Image 1 (tube, rainbow, N blue to C red):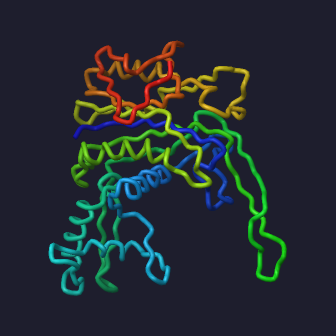
Image 2 (cartoon, rainbow, N blue to C red):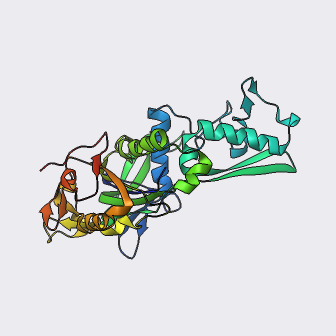
Length: 331
């Protein structure tokens, strides 16, 4: 496996892409600039949910409750993987070191999210006898940031049920959402860490890309419906231990009508994504690049040097290949 970089753009309309539970679940914001912030944890949750719920792959980090509705902790979750070909094993009959060997092997074999993102897994045989497994994830993302200042809305309404058994007044609810936000995520796949989590190039990385694209589109909850993937790049390198870095800094948002303020944006049709600097740096480093994989949504317009640009015609020494779920640009 070679090192690769990821660039992912998606947008939200009348939704809350990542609420802050410590601040009334408001969308996360850079208060000084008005930029919307989305944590890497939120993107990883999107990916995990798609892999587990849609593709049927086991993941380690998921909510599991017992018959009494108690939430399983990480130590108990680890023991779900304390088994061999003959079934579940009795931890009282083994050392912590033996537990680590067996659980580590089974977790990496079964859990795609640990192969992708790593994990710190606590283990406990009994009080005073404990340990942990730590895997550094090959796939890491920076915080996502909108490419423009956003408009946050606050609405109030009434609920369907009374606030108390003896009350006739229904409950009140309030929520915060963004009118529009085009979010830019940058990530990297570290081939050195991939060795330790047994990350697989085709099976796992292909599923990661699919989950980023389709998982974002499939977020159909009340606060998330209205999210759409717009652009996905994966730059795969052939030179060992090398990557360009900060690919998110090489794209820019261009408004079709410059009189429209950032906070007044409401749709991708009002925008163009300027990839001039990105394409130029890729071509400048062509000798170190194996290929570029991409997907572009049909309503997304890319421009280079002020002209509408088709990635399928990029060429010039770098192979650009459309991902299986790619939607060609509308020209």
